[in-house]
Image (tube, rainbow, N blue to C red; front, side, top):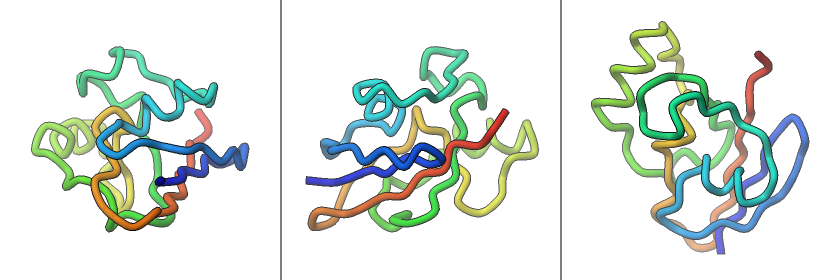
Length: 100
């Protein structure tokens, strides 16, 4: 089963495949802002993938558009609402939640 580690808290969370990182965080009481309720209409749930990017779904055109709109298109930056673990043999994903 995949594991997601959220920083800065260091909380380790078991995750299901095809579930968004935002949902994994929500189910494990890890706070990630999500002003648009997780529908890719803002960038409040942005996170930085520090490890395990290769196990995630490809970034969508909508996600790229939203990140570019806010000039947040640096390497490893994703929207937690759109980012899902889709492959790997018990992958470990390290996610940094930026400070406001």
